[in-house]
Image (cartoon, rainbow, N blue to C red):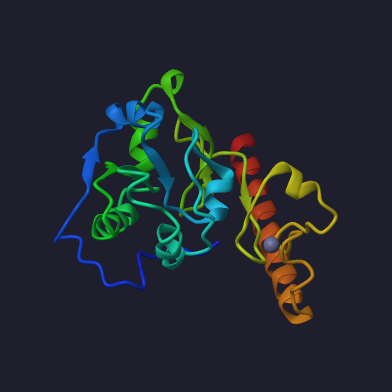
Length: 214
Ligand SMILES: [Zn+2]
């Protein structure tokens, strides 16, 4: 999983043209409108963990590929396009680009998915799954609480319960995505680091235990 990097091959100046911001409280109406093409501008790995109901997945590995996806869309077929991303920054550039490409109306979710999860009642939510975040929580659920994923230390991919049951999973070292590609040297270093961390944690637990019983 790569960090969120806002780059596109095409030169885009978001100050020239910007799409229309949609407040999180108005976003459900956009998602529910069959005439609006809703696009998830995040990477495929992120979309797989969760997205808005019915949203299109451009299937990109990196945001730089977004322009290639846009080239497959006909602006006359989709006069209104709505976009969203994690924090609302990535789609500002994307919306500017779509306007340049002749899409008539381009909407984007103000504050991104995270603001939506904060503002909208889970009972009314159009969000399905968990949202990948760029910190230790890996993903958050609708209540913005840490979700059910951990990060693979070998390749930084988010791992579900199923991934952790796979024979190729080794805690602190590898998962089914990267196990075959890890070099012996890297595997050794990851194992050693995991061993050190486990020892440190156990020492910490014992320390806390002593304090509790004192
Ligand atoms: Zn991995």
